[in-house]
Amino acid sequence: MRTLIVDDVTLARNLLRRYLDKDPEIEIVGECANGREAITAIKNLAPDLVFLDVQMPKIGGFEVVETVGAANMPRVIFVTAHDEFAFKAFGLNALDYILKPFDEERLTNCVRHAKSQMKFDEPDGLRLSGRAITE
Image (cartoon, rainbow, N blue to C red; front, side, top):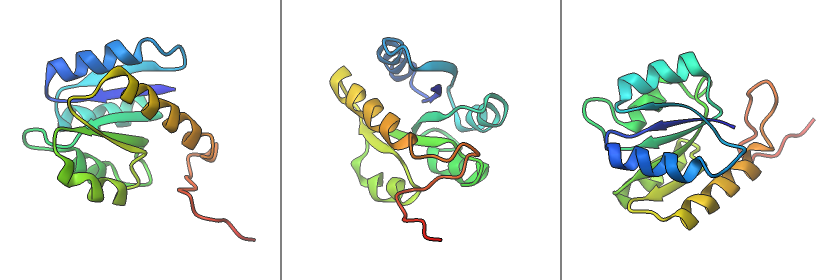
């Protein structure tokens, strides 16, 4: 699973990388320290999954999603120290919402959940998002 890490805090990026590197199914294709870098990386690297900080200087995680657009946005797990943004995050179809500080067990459970949810994604990038499809 091609994964992008986006967080303005170096320590948070390093911790995510250290934990994610233990999973052989995760390929970290890039790291970004701000929203502008994230927008470019999402377009150029085509990750399957983005760990995205909510609050970053100038362009935050929600603005990244809005700028890239729902149709072009990979699956997202928001990572933040603020619990008050969870409702908005799930409204943007987030796979999960991790509160900092987090431990390896929490991240492992989050990745397991992401993998199971992403199995339901269409190969062409269309997402089922838990909605029933009728013919």
